[in-house]
Image (cartoon, rainbow, N blue to C red; front, side, top):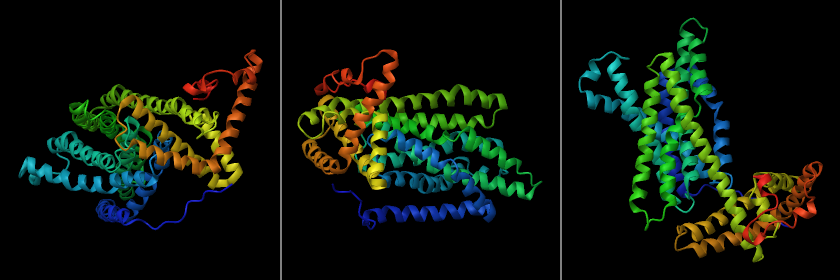
Amino acid sequence: MRLLVPPLRWPEPRALAVGAPLALCGVVVLTLVGRETGGEGLIAGLVLALLPIPLLVGVFRWLDGVTPKPWGQLGFAFAWGACAATLAALVTNGLLVRLLTGDEASLAPAGSGPLDTLELTVIAPVVEETAKAMAVLLLFLHRPHAFNGVLAGLVAAGVTATGFAFTENVLYLGSAVTQDRAGDGLFSSTVATFFVRIVLAPFAHPVFTAMAGVGLGLAAALAPHRHPLWRLALPVLGLAAAMGLHSAWNASTSLSFFGFVAVYGLLMVPVFVSLAWLALWSRQRQLRAVRIWLPGYAAAGWLSHEEPQVLGTSRGRSLARRLGHKAHGRAGTRAVADYQATAGALAELRQRAERQGTAGTDFAARERDLLARLAWLRETAGDPTVRAAGQLREMLAESAAPSGARQGGDRGQGGDRGQGASPYSADLV
């Protein structure tokens, strides 16, 4: 059995061409933020702003787990939000205020009401959401086949916004630390800022930008020749919704406590819950596609008949990865995860060809590539996946036995594998 270990690779010229400008933007942003916060505030802000990042990125990575994007694409999205989009906002917000208000901007004192309201509720939402949405659009233009629906747009937008919120949190938290150190030293401003930005609303920016991502994802899922107007309108509507949410959130900060709570409870929470439901529903839809379309490939000999049901359930996929790690360590885990991702991409490609008509003219070539990779990975990942199917049957038989349900032998007779039915899929999703 061949153990699959990815070789070490030097960065490609194209990656350097993208990474170098983003790194330069990051240096400029770090310098500008450091001028506002001071050295100690900058370090404290970086540490505090990093705390929610593993959770946020982990959530989006899990949602994208059936057909995951390469880490390079997620890294680009995060870096764009943290560096390029933030720099665009820092430069453009002030310029637009001066352009729209003329000499009033230079004569007005800092923190004056009308200018603050204009920047917070109009300029900042338009500039920032447009800058963040550009990353989602660039990913779609670069890899249109991988950008295959709502979940792809939502994940790309969420990771981009997470990067933007990270830099913004460095600025606000660092400034609060500097202010508290110069004052009574009780860090009351830091605690309040940390509570609002990290505890109360860590998903605020991801929720705003997710609206633009959903709009572009919906447009990507439509056939170009059948829905040309909707493919143009949906991204625009999504971006407008992102700007509207962002504007409402910024406006709520100038309201009374009860006004802020009303906006948070009546607008932000329902939108967040709706997006969470949409993301989970989309993920389950991807798993269902695996259970529906992979049995056809199993019938052709590319997989065993047991594997589609394991590859199409969250519990089965997790168990297969654990068995791969037990057999081959981290390399086994990576091989099984790659196997599952390839299987998910194959099922989604087939579904787009059969039901949606959006697979493209190069469908056959991409299908051959995915099948070749699936066969190569199966040398390492096939055995843990098959053993996971056996263990799942045993676990379900044991859990059903006390209630008088059918035993494992009876379960093995249920469903038509050729149509993707599963005797235990409903219990494992």
